[in-house]
Image 1: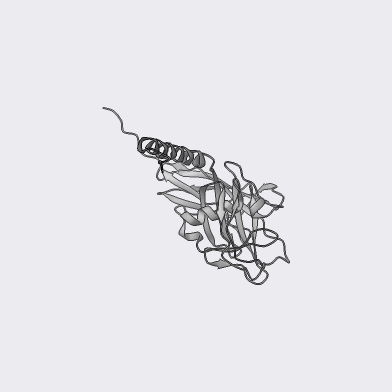
Image 2 (image 1 turned 90 degrees about the vertical axis):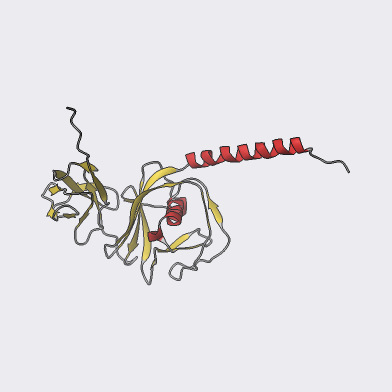
Length: 250
């Protein structure tokens, strides 16, 4: 029997396969986009808030999700950047989101629990994209670069969710500086308005916003600012770093 491949030809094929494999990896990575992901409960607990790169994801359902129904089963691939793929891929990287409990059904994937917090009774994980309630499920919510996604554990499906807070603040300041921040409120339709008496914490001391939503915050070191107000979903975290002093030439 003659050999199908001679040693040089086999080596050439192996080299070509490796080259193609290496070329495919950067292409796959290039298809991923950065999206901000937040996970918050109705008690005001911020489980996660960070930017994650996401794209096509192969997800295996791991829970039968008592509140939603569904089943465990074989993995399915969700194509492109989606809210579900974002959550799943973030859970692979960040411990705060594990365990992630997802079920599958005739209606698609359902989110049962995030970071050990399970939806129970009338609770459910509602979804927001760019501070607006979505009309689609996590699996079919398509994302764009720079989007903001919120998974919010709702207390009950019988009542509307509270409005969302949004904090605008500088990301880098000089140590000891007083900076102006502003807090807005988003309703479920995505309409924005300034918020008074929202408490901004994370600076040298907690401060309240004025009637136009502004507050002056003193920054004494690297910190995370967040705005809260009773009855509303806590704001995004703003991670503030300290500018380095420039060295003066003699």
